[in-house]
Image (cartoon, rainbow, N blue to C red; front, side, top):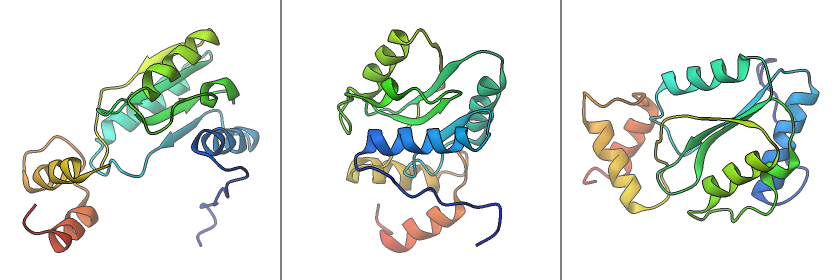
Length: 157
C-alpha cells in the first residue's frame, strides 16, 4: 500500500459511530477538517468536492452537507468531531439529511449545503447511473472504471 494511504478500521458498529470515529481519527491526526464521502455516487462532479474543501478551509466551525436525492447525504464535512451530528439519526431513511441539519442547528454550527446529487441504492438508481454514463454530455464525473463495469454487468440497463 502506498505510504500516503491509511486505512481507518471501524472501532464500533453502526454507521453513525463509524462516521464519527472516522472524522475523529482524521482530526486527531492533525487534519484541519475531515470530509467523508459515500462510495455509491461515482459520478459526483469534482467541482462539488472542490466546493466542499473550500467551505471547510474558511475560518470558523461548520458542517458541510451534500444532500442525496433519497433524503440522506453523499458527503459530510466537519472541522471538529461533533458526536451529536451522528447520534440518534434514522440511518438509511429519507430523514437522515433533515435530522443532521437539526443536529447541526442544535450545536450552533454554520451549515453549508452543497448541490444535491444521487446515490445508487436500488435498481432505479442503477438504471439512472447507467443512463448517465451512456450520455456523453452528462454533467458528472466520467467514472470510466464504473462505466466499464456497468456495461459488462448489465448492458441492457
